[in-house]
Image 1 (cartoon, rainbow, N blue to C red):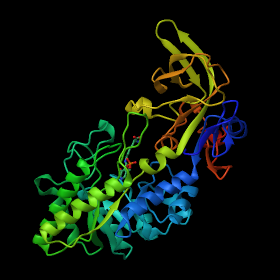
Image 2: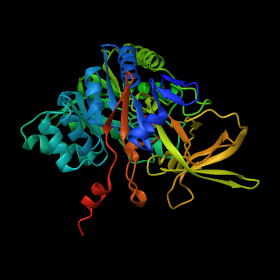
Image 3: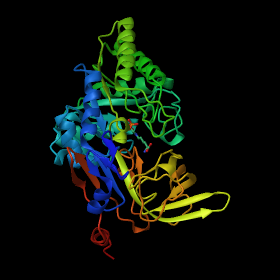
Image 4: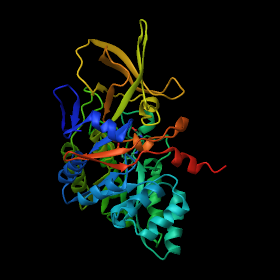
Length: 427
Ligand code: LLP
């Protein structure tokens, strides 16, 4: 959140709201999301890419009806990868032609719903899916615009679980061995599919533009091949998402303008070199839009010093509201926000309340030595892949998302209740 300051007593205010009052009103743990910041990031991406390109927000980072409305108003499109995300997008009024459907194993029902709704594109992920989507479109009497997702063979320097363009993983069709060219051949033969472009997504939390440039280069090379073989110039290239954000001061993320400039330049240069009309570019940022806009507010429950090691600070949430530390060894920072403290620093590990020792929120953090039960602490940069990956582990109730704007806070996703939990348990 951008508008952070402190009261004279040292309590943090966010957009003019005191965190102690926020905790009082909405409870903890809770995610607080700065709506103005979210919208400003949407605009930064749109402005960076301009009218010659499309920005599809990746809904998996965090999606709710309010978010869909903000995206719509700020001129963004939306990438969904499940029926649930598609339903949310449509329910909030996103026009279907501004929605793209992704996924490596879309169900027949998901495909049918997407085609019926009239989504702007379906991104094909395998040879079997080409046939499946073609068949369903045919039965519905539609000609569905599609892209083919290719794996360009780039090793993105990120965690193995979130890198996607190397060859030994589940997404896309390899450029290597002429696989992607064969996919193009097959799609072009199918009446019910309209091939509009090639898609590549190389991974996530990436800090340099070189991987995207290599991907762009290889995708343009495929477009040239398609033109030479079929006399068809595909009008679109999508280079996916993946731009990293700062979780800690050591992280040095690229700005949307930098990536737009780098991609625009390379696509234009390579297309001109190949005698191709420059295709319409699109990108799919998720984390870079949602991530920095929210923080999680926790209340400290137990403080346990381990002699000669560190102090374990247990909060009222944990891996059920932020799985990223346990899953990817992600790094976060944390601060005491309910009061000022002049106590010296102590080495802590902020942990949750779940029944396993991997339930870590922040692995290593210096916190004031007088930290005590009842203190409020905040973990920034939790707007992406935290609420969207939250679970009910240990029957935890998933926290609410509260949007803060112009000194007002309103719940956009409410806290789960015991009644919600029990309503699913029908045995
Ligand atoms: N486009 C496609 C096809 C994707 O698969 C993804 C992310 C994105 C766009 C958006 O990537 P972003 O700009 O957010 O990096 N749960 C992991 C991240 C998984 C990303 C999956 N795909 C995490 O918490 O780090």
